[in-house]
Amino acid sequence: MSQRDMKTSQTASAVQPVDPIKKQIAESEGFPIGKIDEFVVFIQNDPYITSAGLQYKMLQTYKAGKFAVQAVMPSKEEYALLRRMMGLKDEEPLVVMRGEVWVDGLARPFVDYGTTTPKNLKGFVRFSDYPLEMATRRATNRAMRLATATGMCSVDELQVAADSQDHLNGDIEADHNGSPATQSQIDLIKNLGRSPRLTERERERLKTQIEGGLDKRQASELIQKIKARLDARRKADAQPIAA
Image (cartoon, rainbow, N blue to C red; front, side, top):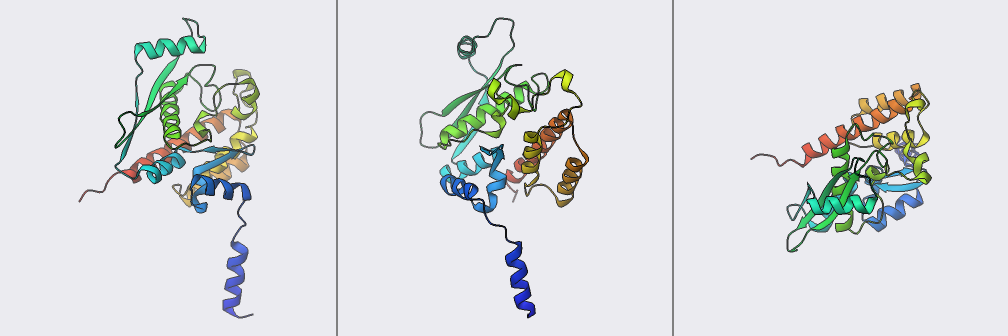
């Protein structure tokens, strides 16, 4: 076999077949197939869109400089109404943020809300850790989902509590400290680790940490560390370069 044939054979064997479900999602959402693992994560076979995926859809739908995404404090009336709708008692804490997507040419923004309570934020991140940050992320993600007509739930909404979803959330109760990380947590770490914004050394370190074994708390902290790092690098990439 010639060297050229050997190279062709090696290249063909290195190319992995595309998962039909991923291909279908990429086509329906307008994602490049090469970016599907950055824009969509699968938790127990269910697809969830990432913040990077939503931002890509915003850019594709409205173009750079033609829209603005922000989170603002709700009015007293909105806050009171949401408390009543959620059936919360006066002593139960609630953090609410209003997500807005403003688009050039439209008189009103796309609006949705993000909430956190001890009941709906008890999985990968506890309410006592980042209630405002998670409410903000949920609010802006939901507003972007609305603006781009995205049907998939955002991965940052996985912590919404429901008895039927506790197995997804990797619920970390005090008496479970030290128990092995859930498969959902491991899957999410692996998916986040595929981001091209991580270095090869960082990906190798993640692989080593997974193979070495993680408990639920360690996995939770690692997930948030990866997300924070990716968010910081995504923001840095989005900064305009000074002339």
